[in-house]
Image (cartoon, rainbow, N blue to C red; front, top):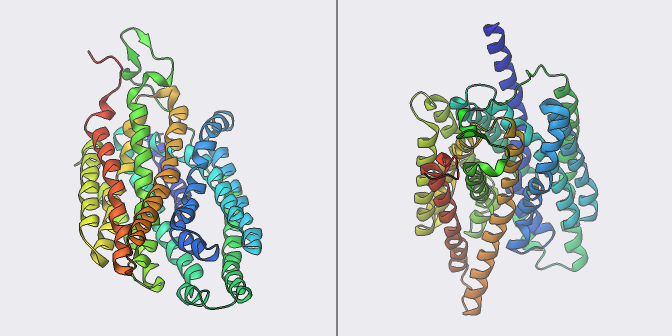
Length: 438
């Protein structure tokens, strides 16, 4: 029986890794979509980062409803529903490309985000409680490898499909008539048609297949931490470490999105051609995959989850300072190295936060998923800081491109408070299991 259970869990891990591959692919193509949308819709920096906002704000809208849905239909049917909704969102890109209307593109991204919210709300707690909580970060690190390998592929594929010829288009639109400009931008917008049709078909097929997948039923266990004296905890507000975990995950997702989704646009702002800059996101993801691999080997045998999180947060602060303090390709490399500091944060925060929550696990998972909205708020704030810095320099009469590119570099200071909050959670916050400080 024990052998059958282990085999069943291994198969479940492979299946869930496939799902992480799917939403990794969909999520990380935003790095290519941001400069693409900025060009075809003639947007400012802050406006272009609404691509990230449309995706991640859906986690706020859908997380608690997703928790309700999962309580009604279970993890497996919830995963199936999430995939199908993501497929519907992909189809919205077809009329969006035809109209070349930014809000329609954002609607498609938002719908995909709704589906991804259901999928993530089901998949993350499922893989966390599929085995011992002490090795939860190890299992999630395996999921991270699948997620980031998919992200690297998605970034390369969509970078090639969407950003091919973007430099030439940007040069031409400044010197041609309005009619010619619209023709150029319409042709460029049409390049999303076939990729998103294929994506929709794949998501619909996977949504049907997951319903038939042999996934074992699992439920979280309650621990002794669920009691205070003789009183059983009755609601999620009695778990302070959960709320600290939500805050830590909020700032983490914002930092991760900045590291992955801004690096291409950042490279272009430094003067790198799009044909080179499109590979920069892959550097970030490669750094994450290597660090995930180390996590699989080291956790929990050689490295505890809490220690891994402390090291990650400290490296995040160091690399952020290095980004600001350097320039050119060196600065880009430090943005990519944020992949090292980011890799084990998500895998560690989930088990450290969910430990001992028992029957509150699905609701707590929904709150953690809601914190993904950090990816909707912090990156546009970075974009707004970039715009503000550039406007200030222009107002001073500075038009030198190299100096203006420094506005993007300096704006990465926003990452330092994010990693500081994560470090505080890693040192103290996850241990704060009761409001009783005695």
